[in-house]
Length: 190
Image 1 (cartoon, rainbow, N blue to C red):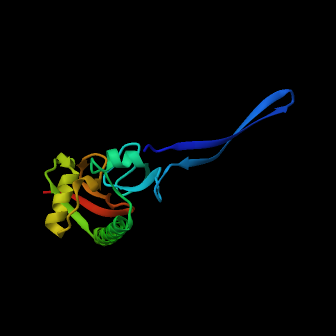
Image 2: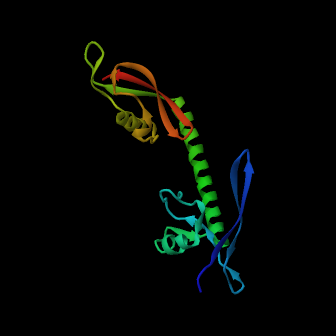
Image 3: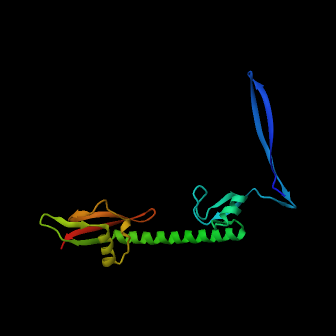
């Protein structure tokens, strides 16, 4: 037997200032019942991956019954949001929150260490203090690892362009979201 959807509307016309106005009001929806079970029009699902125009991974959304059963479930893009899956999602979110908190704490500790360090960067330089080549973020990352056993990704070191002059300067390192470390480097001649 087919699913029957009937929308109930209240239709009313009324004259006002010589014009007729139409009011259309939705009263409800009748859904065909199969036995004692009511056929659901949409269901809650948990997305397993990002889907453009629908939602992001681990997001709980309302999807139409047919879309969920015929597209999302067969392609393994979502699971039904029942009690078991919701508890798994909650545990996963709690675990991710704890992991992010630990990463932020670690980044704060590294930022504190970096603020106390003056990194010496030996380079070949000419008589007038001009450097042959330059000091890049990769060299700074390598020297931090060698001299102070601090591992920082070169992409997180924020220098606008390579350093081409001797002397001291402060640079910033984006360690984590909202955590920025400051490092003093001293570019010296070999």
